[in-house]
Length: 443
Image (cartoon, rainbow, N blue to C red; front, side, top):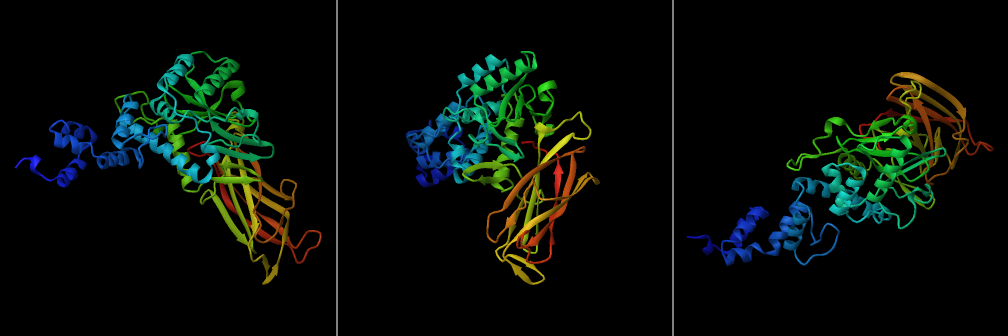
């Protein structure tokens, strides 16, 4: 009995076990197989399996007439790239854009339309580089961020929409966005001229802070590593790697599907941190931004004492690091968030409807050696007054460290009621120990 005599349902099940290339070959056998191989349900399956698509869309989000046309167009559009790498890069962007859709659509709206091969080749020609394959693909899906004619360098208050986000302490504000190809060219040329680097330099600027703080990320197009400039970058081009070197694999081999450069690994890690809640949105007044201060244990400590809840975490600040200065080789910003639980302040069984901070005590350690023991009034010159159910009082500060690991712990002294009108005796509130550590991935 030949396959022609087998029922359509059974044949369809058999075809689903084959891949798209095999399906094309089978369609040449007969008209019956050609018709079966054109079934939309079959190509919907392939689109879901390979591209996680449930609607017939091209890589720009445009609707197409069928799933077969969709799959065919995708394969044609990216025919010069290893297909497993195309799927991985798409998955990376899907993870980021799904989070943005649900949490920060304003940033999603800034993502540029995918660049063409012609536009990428223009950049390579002007800057005399060859982009690593994963980075080329990342730009094929989204050409960085665009701000509708606004200059993203106009200041933090005007543009807190960086995809990577950042942190703020004192007057130091950072919000990192992805550069479009046009900005990659202009920023790279500007910095190469400023530092008198040779035209043959293989470094290009791919991300930067939208504030006046000079924080720049550089992709080494030769080996695929991503670097960030330190405090000494303007004078001697000092940089630090942002991704573990051991994870980076060959980035220019079109015949291998194992390429992963630092840019792809960096964005994948950022997507994971957003999805697992390690980093979240920060709202200050009417301004929202992605905060790099960790929100989950073990990088964020949480302690509750007498109804006062304190959360604390730190982030490495590479643009303030000075690798030539032993005493302040590394700099960490830390964020302290304090609030009063709904039941209020409870001391010896007595409930109070408010409490106010008076003193702070910090113990800062480098490795296991105490380098700073601070007893002082207030926090950044303020004496926060807490009420039940109100938003957290948040403040940020920073500390230099001679080592790449350390910790901060301590306590606050509060009084029930107000400092001007205390309702009871002062009491201590614990600040759980939180780490200061040079991370595997620097953002």
